[in-house]
Image 1: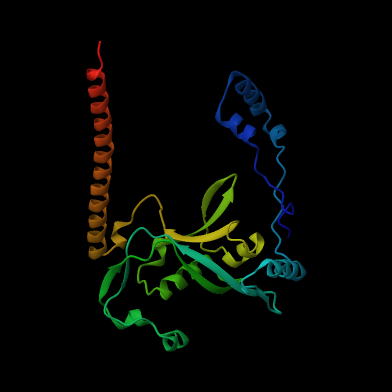
Image 2: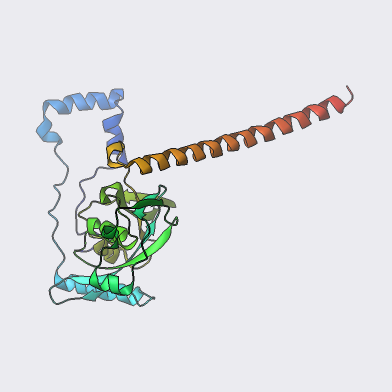
Length: 265
């Protein structure tokens, strides 16, 4: 499968979308006529079923990827068609996370033996991960987003539920930075392969999973208390910003009044 035009798109143009949303006299008339014969309006091309790339196509893409990779972090193809490689994930978490309290950092021995130090104690404490820290992961082409999130939490010994987090892909389009939430079944290494090694084209970001409705029952009492503390601090910061803003306005107005009063009539 090629990136350019191997899949036909069923999306309509912007003008077609606007006709569906804004019913002027012209569009209303034609919509009423077409509604009598709905089978005549079925002119959109059918979407072609997605076909997985062949082994030869994967090999070509990996060869092209490795020639552009300058940091010796290329991908390696296996005989069964799977491949391994590296992805970098930016951690952009605004809220504190829960980690075990009073235990040592994991050693190389713990990593080799896959020792779960978090399970050795029930004590928990809140902790802020460094904002926009970067973690590099070595994964397989079959590794899913869900597994990437779980791996990141395990590396930082975070005991929060993985459902509280989501992995986003960050892309640059038309001079704007856009974020798109990935499905838990997506494979990040495949997306990395399609986009190439340039992180300005595509990068991955771990953020809080904003579902619109907060499931407060999923948080512990210490977490909720920390949220209140954070909200109070943010509120005070906003109040100070507004006060400084209007203090400057008041100062300029007073200076303008003094200058106008000092001028002769």
